[in-house]
Image (cartoon, rainbow, N blue to C red; front, side, top):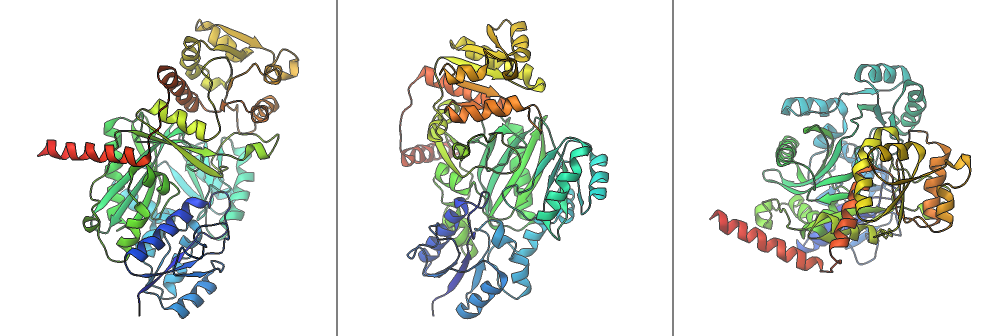
Length: 529
């Protein structure tokens, strides 16, 4: 009788539990076929490719509950079960399945628990000499209050064992803590609420790694374009990183390999870091496939989920021909796609709870051109001339000056609210001051209605935004005006427009990019010889 493996899918789709995990499940099925092993898919979402009749050898359209899965295992008698590819839903079943005597393929359930359990995770980081933001756990508001006082505001409050940043909040003051702790505790259930010191103005980094228990190879290092605090599923990312220094990247590589060895990773692992003042902080580790795996695989030309599946059934990275990190000679930018145009009046501000419903990517020789392509794919056509409205919070006013100067230098006409206009005028930038919406015309809404605004830069003033800000940001969606709500996003937009003014965009297939990258790798190897 043929060997069989059960793959646990992601279950019903919702924001945070998206199609990226379905991609991984499908590639697991394809890999098993290549290895001559029967694939059995368990999933209950008719909108996924994993539930197509020809994806796996057998499909069980059943809920992802312990009882249902154990019944399938009893009937099919597989050699093992894969829980790494369906996101948080199957991962939460790892320990219960192990207790029932089920053979889990890949990284052990104990390693998964180390990454999920805050105390065990902290012990591991201390042992490896790695840094993480000050943190604590709490079950009640009183406990949370003590942790927040000890580590200092702002704090990031989040439930345990959830995906998509559900009920996650950045809390800047004690008066808001009680409300958010209550929400997080409801979602967290029997597990504690996690409270971390929030690192303001930090750069967030995602790393995907593949390991076979002995050899560990970094699949890709992605620098977030938006600052830390925006969910990784919503943030635009660049592979390779576009601004991080070489010593910082070396620290990230070293820390990632250390943790993979300690967790004895067999399959995929994702790590999220924050970089502040050239110090590297570990935010979280997920010994499973992450939502960035399809992006990294397409950008690098290496099917990571397929390779990870083959490792789980006994192959190793040397046999599979992937033993060194590939650093491409081109830039890939991942951008998220949002459903805001379906919800008139909604605020477009991003935060720690995921809101995106899809993603696109742009590839080119330089960051600016790749970023422009990603924006076009996401439905934002950035202007090359016209009028730009700028209104930013006080803490962003100094940072927006070089961006405004850059736009002015390219021929854009700048409009701003009184506070931002005053700062720009001091820096010798020509700016047209507009009334606040409540003060009447002429204001930014008038310019939008008349089609006289080509772009908006507006950063939020706080957790509870002012009414004027919400109206501005909801109107950019109504009138389909390109916008950005972060300084880092505005800087990337400036770089993109500069690139487009220098040269037209060109088109090249993924395969051509992969081929050029492989040629560069061969050149480097021959240089070493």
